[in-house]
Each structure stands twice: as structure tokens, then as C-alpha cells.
Length: 364
Image (cartoon, rainbow, N blue to C red; front, side, top):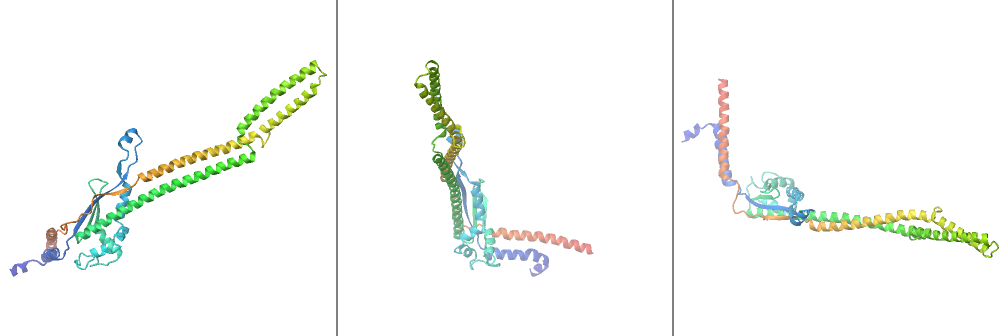
């Protein structure tokens, strides 16, 4: 028996036998059981309503997957911040770095125990995969104790929910804040335009120059009619009764009517203080005031829409399946590990043996 063992080449011992023995010892006595806790989640948010009548009937109030929030959750769960939040009480560090675990498997056994090394170690224990649907995320956490794996998985789910709620609240606050700023600006513009119009009315002493100009034109028209009638009467008297006592009175009345007509005409179109100039300025200020009021109405409507959209668009994490409590160790696959070591050793031994034979034949 010993002679047969001694007849085995040192290469076979080094490449096949020794690695297989070490693998057997490791998987049989040293390798820790690894338990996997799995959960499935999807990030949802209300979809935008369809404007078509059919969409309004069939699609209103529907729920859709939130792709942006899903990507944010995926990136967050794989970040250092997520690990820091779930390990505030050193639960993760103690779960993977317990002295009771094998030095080959535990955190800090053969390497340092810094936060960065913990992140690299934990990254190997965490897997985020796509489920049967592209929107479903499958979260897998490996640990050396089933309860630890489940607890870490649950903590990650809780932090994902907090993240989505925070993002939604921030988006709502930003949308409402922006709409409030628009309303405040529009209200200030409307107030300024209204004050400018009121100040102009006080300074010009008019309420509506256009309306007052129309009234003035009507007065001028009436005065002109009276002037024509008076002139006609004066002409008749001078023709038929040149010595009539009413002629001086009619002449005075004609002069007064002409003076009043000239005065009324100057008030309408007689320079910078005329009704025509006031009407142009009034029209400008009135249009500015109306435009500001319309802007305020649009801003108020947008504010209501933003508030309604903010209340409606609430993204949330929907747990399809909660973190499971594994009842058996999925890893390591001990027999497979030993057999894989044996097969790889045999393959390496065969290749090296052929190389050595070729080298010897070349030398000979």
C-alpha cells in the first residue's frame, strides 16, 4: 500500500491530492453555512391620466411602475450610505465579523476591518436582480445566520421605503414651492399694475378717459348744433330786423358757444394734458393691469394643479414578498466544491504532465 502511494508522482500530489484534501477539510470543517434571505419589491406611482375620453374611462387613477424611483432605489441599496444607515448599531459588522465564525469566512478574519473594507465585503453578500418583470426588484442578502440575513434584508427594505418617501416629499415640496413663487410674483405684478392705474387716475383726475372723451364729443356736437342755430337766428335778424334789441345778445351767445367749443376741443386733443393723451396712457396701464390679472389667474390655476398633482403623484414601495427567513443553508455546496477542486486538479495535472513529457522529449 505504501509502495503504491510512494509511486504517485509529486506533481499529482501537489496538483490533485493536496488541493482536494484541503478542499475537503475546508468544506467539511471550516466553511460556514450561508443563508439567503430574499424579498421582492416594486416602486409604484400613479400614472398620468389620459386626456382622451377612452383613456379617461379606462386609464384614470391607474398605478404604474416608477422607473426613475426604481433606479434610485437600486443605486441607493448598493451604496455606502445604505450600509451606514443599516449598520448604525454595528449590527451588520457584528453579524459578519463574529469571532465564532471561521477566520476564512468572517469579516476582518484575514483582512482589515475598516468601513471601506466592510462595504466591499458586504457588496459580495448583497445581490439586486431583476424579477420576472423588469420593474420588479429581487433583493438577496447572504449571512451566516438565517435571522441575521432576514433582519438585514428588512432593514434595507425599510431604508428603501424611507428613500422613496423622501424623494416624493421633496418633489411635492419643490413643485408646490415653485407654483407658490409664481403666484406670489403674479400677485405682486397685478398689485403693482393696479396701483399704477389708480395713481394715474388720481393724478389725471379722470376715471375713464375714453368714456369721458366720448361724453365731451357729444357735448361739442350739441354745442355746435346750438351755435349753428344761434348763427342762423342772428343772420335772420340782421337781415330782416337789423335794429332788433336781441342782436347783441345773440352775438354774445355766439362768442360764448365758440369759446366753449374751442375749450372742449382743446381738452380732448390739445396737448400732453388732453383726454387723448390721457386715454393713450390709460389704455397702456389698463392693458398692463388686465394682463397682470390674467397672469395671476393662470398662476392660481397652475398652483391648484400642482397641489393636486403633488397629492396624487405619491410614489411608494410595494412589497411583493417580504424578507424571507431561510430554513436551510443554500451555500456552500460542499460536495460540489470538493468535486470541482478534484476535477480542476486532474485537468491541471494532465496539462502539466503533457508539458513535462514534451519538455523531456525535446531535451532527449
